[in-house]
Image 1 (tube, rainbow over the protein chains, first blue to last red):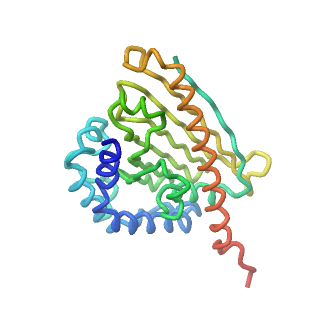
Image 2: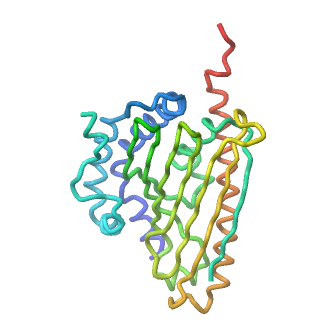
Image 3: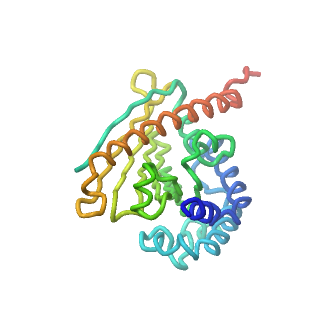
Length: 87
Length: 187
């Protein structure tokens, strides 16, 4: 039983696994090559982030969303202000 | 009834590399086996302040909760959802991560704070990591009578996981060092 729960929850956002790695790879490169070297004036990986975020919003519904919303971590439909500014 | 402990570790790598390793720690598949208690990590929010050079990130962590089987039985599950908030100040060279559980809160509250700063003895080459963890069993929960034992047990598991985390960090720092263009001889 315990194992079953663990499995279902562990895979709850895995439909986004590919988009997640694409975003994290892009982020890690930007962080090492630009951000820590003083080039923090522009946010990058915006399209990767938007795709990943859209996938997450879709798949967070079932279990994660209620507690994340209650914490104010995920807002129902406000976009990321920084991302929007760079559109 | 709060159990708190602090740890400190010095990485013989510059701050830029160590904080880059910190971002990679949970998301790289090759670390999955060492850090098997971390089941899933998602970036939930991010914000860059392009003027001050501060990066704010929120991630959601699904963690295999530490503890013996009877604990899982009482609590009804063996996984725990946590939220990690990170602020990186690139100008001042500091990184601060705060992680706390947001599920199982009626039983237990765990808060972990980690800071990475350039080491005062060798600020361009070394980085000091300071970590503080507090564990609190809620006094009126079903676990209250066993609180001390559970807090102790949790603390032991956290210490073991921190040690594994440090090994992974050292490994990532090493390969980032090998990859680093700074190591290339000048033309």
